[in-house]
Image 1 (spheres, rainbow, N blue to C red):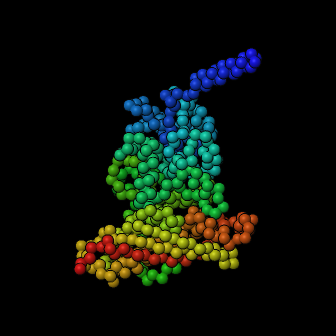
Image 2: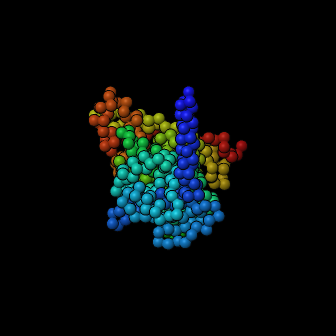
Image 3: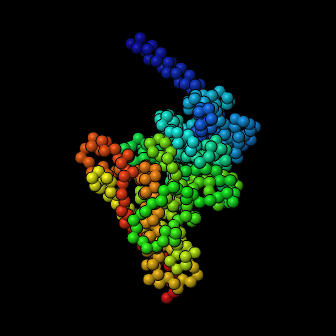
Length: 430
């Protein structure tokens, strides 16, 4: 009995000692440097350049700016040339007076240059990292990732971390881009039904004279529409939804801008989509919350009518004809007119039907353009049509043997669109 008491006493002492030593080994919050965003670039030497945007403590002045770092209103960016992600983290830890902590990282930014070379290695590293949350955003920058982070200065927010969250959410409301998390991006990358895509970002210097719409695609599709309207009258070129990041005619201070989508084939960047093409993507995937599109007026060729898309539903069927995919999306759109000429007397029931027809042709055109661009130019099924196509196969082995991701480029499309203008919102003379 005495021996048992001694054993219990010794066990208690050991537990107390472990607790005390454990408390001493815990890293104090004051010794941590919280990373808001991580940037990936490739140097001319072929080596990796990592950039860490670190949140400054409240009331901090930031410190001096040098070749290795630069500061914004609430954060500082420190860069390092290295061979791998983990070695880069260790090198920065040896330089800073604090230890990098990645548990609050809100964005992972890849430059277009490194993304076009392939980011498989970095994806697996990030998804397996114990500190990086799978909910952080994935952004592909049209400029250098370090430059992107250096110019991500919040204009309306105090905290850089909150800034990244709000920026992605506000862009989603317009329909001009889509918020992609690390988990979603990696899942699409590893899937056999779809390809991955990410938010397209860049730095807008606020110079209107240098802005321009992004419609230089070498591919011109013939969508098979029954519309008798000329292609020029229903083209989205030059409209406010035809821009990509860094090209919008906004006159403001230099800041980052997320607009459009970056399209991948496997782990490599193969192209980009502008604002209206992103809306087409959201419509086809049933992810559109709301958006505004400018439809050419059927009454005056130089004017546009703004339509607010409030309800979008798409049902898709995929058939195989002699091994060739035949994709048939059926789209229902509910809209309302939010801008029109002063002559509201022209909005008779007959003219509303005419606007609906023009809207149908316009939406049909940019949806077809999106489909043929992803299939014939990028050869990448970011719409996940594969999840509908798989029903044509009896076993998973047959599906894998068919190799949908390589056969998507052979697809044909037949889009059925119905546009309904909710007339109860209109001011009509009675």
